[in-house]
Amino acid sequence: MEIYSEILKLAEVYSNYTAENLSKLVKIMSLSSKEKDVVHEIKEQMLKAGFDEVKFDKLGNVMGRIGSGDVILAIDGHVDTVDTGNLDNWELNPFSGEIKEGFVHGRGTVDQKGGVASFITAGRILKEIAVCKNLTIYFVGSVMEEDCDGLCWKYIIEEEGIKPDFVISTEPTNLGIYRGQRGRMEMEVFFRGISAHGSAPERGKNAIYMASRTCLEIEKLNERLKEDEFLGKGSITISQILSDSPSLCAVSDFAKIHIDRRLTWGETKELAVSEIEEIIGGMDARVEVPKYIETAWTGLEYGMEKYYPTWKIPHDHLIVKTGEQAYHQLFGKKPLVDKWTFSTNGVTINGMYGIPMIGFGPGNEVLAHAPNEKVPVADLIAASAFYASFAVVLDQMKMNQ
Image 1 (cartoon, rainbow, N blue to C red):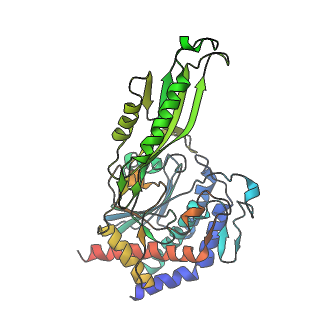
Image 2: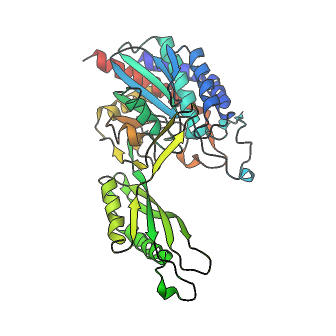
Image 3: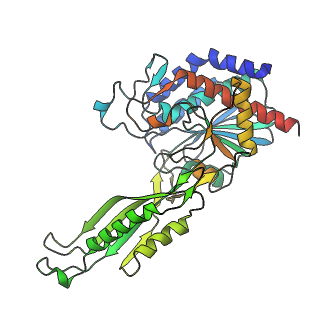
C-alpha cells in the first residue's frame, strides 16, 4: 500500500538524521542510575521531532507521547548501558559515536540506544504523515535496565498508572520479531558453621565444606532442568562464593554462594527455591532471593525482588500477527520470528503484568555488552520504518472494528 511505501521512503530520507541522533546518544556515557544527561538529550530530540508531549517520571524515564487515542501502544528502549570493559579490546573510542562504512560505532549502539534513535525517527514520520488517530503512542527511554531489568516498567505501571495495550521492545533482534525469553532470578544461600582451631577441625563445622557440597549438587541439578521447545532449557550456575572465619588458622563459620538461575517456561520462583532447599536439607543453611534497591538519577530510591519471570507470546497472538503484517507491508517478505537469549524489560511488561509484547530492534544481539559494538545504518532505517508501520497497522485494525 502507498502509505507503507511512504513510510519506508521517509525512513531512508532520514537515515542520516537517525544515525546522527544515535551518535549524539552514544557520546554520552550513561551507566545505570546515571542517565540524566542522555535522557535530557533524548527529550530534546523528541521535541525537535514534533512529539506532542515529552516528560520525565520520578524514576527518570523519559516519555514522549504522540496522539490521544483509545488504544495505547508503547515502544520501549532502555538508555543505560554496561561499562566498556578493557579499552584495549576496542578498535575505536567506545564513546566516539563515529559513523563510517555504513555503521554507527560505540557502546550502546546495539544495546539499546539504536532502538531509541530509530523510534524517535518513527515518531517524526508518524507526525508528518498524520495518521494513527485511534492510538496513544508512548516512546519510552527507560532507565536502570542493565542493573535490574523490568524495574523501570514496574514503576511506569504501578506508580505512573500507564498500562499499555501493546508494547514493542527495541532490544536488538537482527530485525526479527521476538516473542519471548527465558526468565531469570538470583538466589543467595547462607551457610552457618561452627569455628574451631585449625589444628583440630573435627571440633568445628566447616561452612565452606557445606557450600562446596551444595555447589557440586547444583552442578548436577543443571543437567536435569526442564526444557521448553521454544525457549530452550533452564539453567543454573554459581556466580560467586564467599566465606569467612575468625582467622586463617580456624574452621570457617560462614559461607555464601550466589546463584544465577535461568527459568524456562513453567519454571517459577517457588520451584527454583524449593530445588535448592532440597539440596541443603539437613544443613544449617537458608536460601534467599535478594532485592535490588538503588537511587535513580532523580534521587528516588526504588527497587524490586531479583526475580524476573519467564514470558512468551503465542505465535498466533494479535501482536505477533500485527508485527508480521507491518513487516510484510514494508519489505514484501516474512520476518524471522524467534526469541532472545538474554533478559529484557519483558519480564515485567508481560511476565508480571501480562501486557502483550514483541521485540524488534536494530543490530545483532551478539554485540550486546561486547567490545567494538556497532549497528548498521540500514538496520536503523528498517527499525524506524517498522515502528511507524506497526502503529499504522494497529490503527487501521482499530478503525475497522
